[in-house]
Length: 274
Figure 1: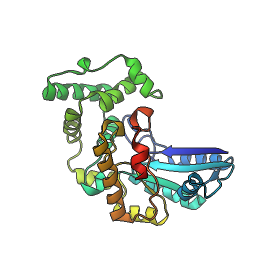
Figure 2: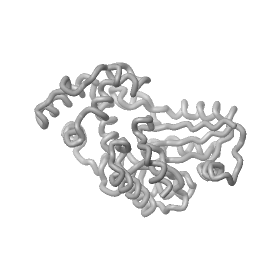
Figure 3: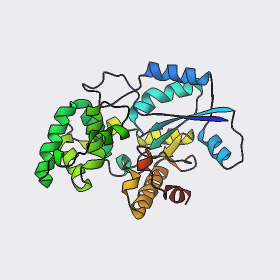
Figure 4: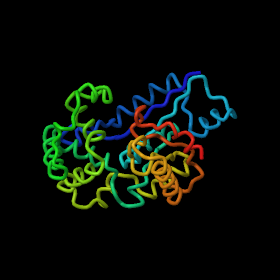
């Protein structure tokens, strides 16, 4: 048996922002990709997969699960109508921070800034604020470029360096302060940004009724950077918040943020089981 999972994020036109900090899938390309996948695979839903894992169901010989991360508004507006029209099931894995606290996840602030600033401009702003908060500069933190290239093998060296610095090298106690200071130069109301950027609660309810809903951690942090207690609290908060909004009957799975081997701690399986 062959099982394929295909994951998407932003679904909109490619020239929406001045810089390529966000790599979207345009509607036409998504449609074509789904049609081509459908020629070789049978689409399954998350219930099919769970039942197969538990030994209660046999999947088609060539099975494919379509997934979307982050609960983005563009997914609901642009991808869901295509899925409905073609009768293709999917799972949308959602973070809870935007709903519980009306705050955007830090990673999405970074995406937004990367889409509105050149890599060099962004790095200069980070460097300035890092020195302001910590007294250090980026040259004090950044290792050989090969470390970034291994983690972000699909990016140019310049982009890989920026992403590696943002996600792994800036000390956590400074990272949010630095990003927020730059972010608020572009966005005046974080609540309004969340309403524009993420699905509404009503839209989550619709996905739940379709059994298209999953969780993606509360805050979209790299899970391996959390203690076991922090990790358990994060996933519990994610699940309870989304269940409170949309009901919990259809929530059967989690997509791990970032998804690299370095981001998935060994205790995650045991915690998710519980």
